[in-house]
Length: 453
Figure (tube, rainbow, N blue to C red):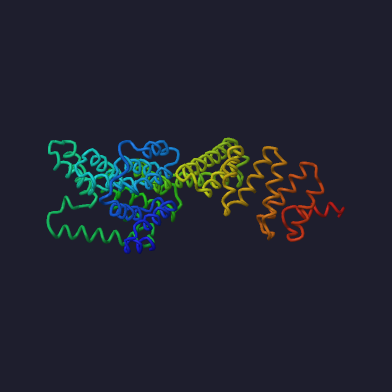
């Protein structure tokens, strides 16, 4: 709101500064970038750019794309402030946005280049292809049509324009087969009906009815991203109600197909796939644990099932770590994500790897105490007991209330002191807990035995 007001007052420098700060906090805020670019273009109109040739920012940013794509996006935006339509820097923004999982911003960067260079057919081809990977077939048609107007001999553009038009037609559903105005109205009414259905909580019967309508359409148009995504969501909704293998397999299949159609460019779809994989593992783990608990231990194949259970848990830990690492790679400066990665590494008993992440996570005030708690656990498991004591003591000293977290930290500290042979220090920790919570674990037994009772 402040930025918009600054634009109205033609205070462009202040507006640019505000929006750049917003984008540091929310790099995926597309509307903010569009506003920023408009303001920059107005502010630099008639001014000579200091950027020319292969700029230093372009070279530096290219090296940052893989390591820290969000930082590369920030560098590109800062550089575009004085030359908003610079081709190389907009290409840098495009590559960084793709790497960071923001395909819409990558499209905007290409759009900026094309708008400033309306005969740049090479970039237009790239934009058209990018639109198709995002499922924006209508816009791809417009781009390829413009290329064909500029160069009628560009047979690739002509062919892709036709292909994109066919995809767009199928996406609208039924328009290519309509015989009359009444047919078109009928298709429109059906589309509205389906949209209304998607807005309410669906019963399994409603979901099955919609799947029955959409699946035959999909079989005729398996490259239709929107249709594939809708079917995937229906199977996901069905699984939430039924919790059955059929629904889970259906959701996974169609989300996997969606992911392939968009070339892995949609982080939301990737997260869905990861979640579904974990749910599949959880269902099998629960089934095995229930079977073993209900008498399966005495079965001839019990050992094989125990091994499968252990392998499933190991695989789940790997998936969680992989997903946490991806989030850190996309946002390397987010200390909360560092903590979450460290937490998963601790759960997988990868203590050495966890230490580095948790040490950085300590700098986040919201995760500091939890990070120190886990660091103490890591040092304990690595038999670095003096370092464990230091972490637990530092964490406990920063907590005023004897809440669940402080009790947990003091208990762990007491156990470390016990391993070090420091009985008095260990007993003091237990007594501190005993005074406020008699029933905490085996604290009462430990304290009372010290009095000979």
